[in-house]
Amino acid sequence: MTHEQEVLQQFISKRIELLRSSEELRSQLQQQAELLLRVEGAIEAFGLIGIELTAAEGPAPAETPE
Image (cartoon, rainbow, N blue to C red; front, side, top):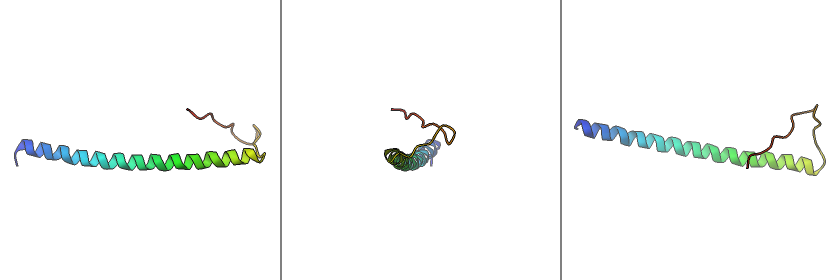
């Protein structure tokens, strides 16, 4: 194999590694987004039935970026 072919093979291997890593990150992001929606739904459900925290009992709800 020539030097150029070896370099090309390294680039191809790196691309495969990056694609796998990107897919793993996408999957983690999707899981986190789904969990966030569930948690927000649970918090909203508590609010709908009148259960809230006072300032002394817990942190104030954070604003969600939109």
